[in-house]
Picture 1 (cartoon, rainbow, N blue to C red):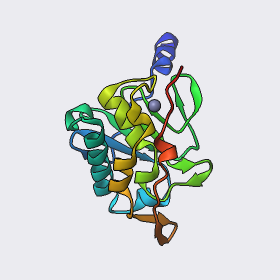
Picture 2: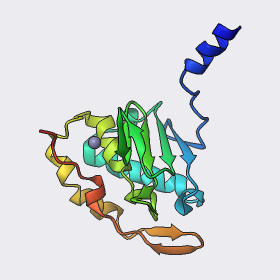
Picture 3: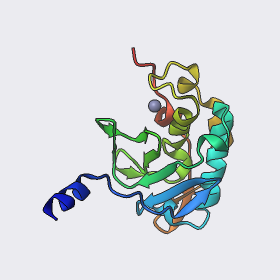
Picture 4: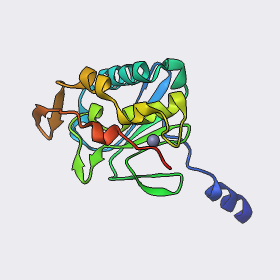
Length: 167
Ligand SMILES: [Zn+2]
């Protein structure tokens, strides 16, 4: 019995049931950030994913069966790196916090970056699109952001999305 319990403890945590599903991708909300509690979140996630898929030349099939976790921690651990703000390792995890301050909307997070990995791979960020994002920013700007009980602007900072090639 003891051996059995140890074996269980060594297993990965079972994946949480998604809070909602977008075209076959499960979305898990693990944050108390304001935008994640808003009823428009599923639609905002869907349109953000659609814009990102278009930017990267992908389709919903690239995200089907994957889990997208919105994580309230400042950083998500990613393949040994403890300071990542987003991660793609088959599933996607993104921090909803920007250096300790909550993002005002899902569009501002690293989600569109991680979708890029889901579509093209390219872990070393060789593709020039990792340093561009202008057309994608245009498509996602001028949306509503949220603080506790207030609506605010949601300006896009492409610096959150960019990553220079690893050389
Ligand atoms: Zn990356």
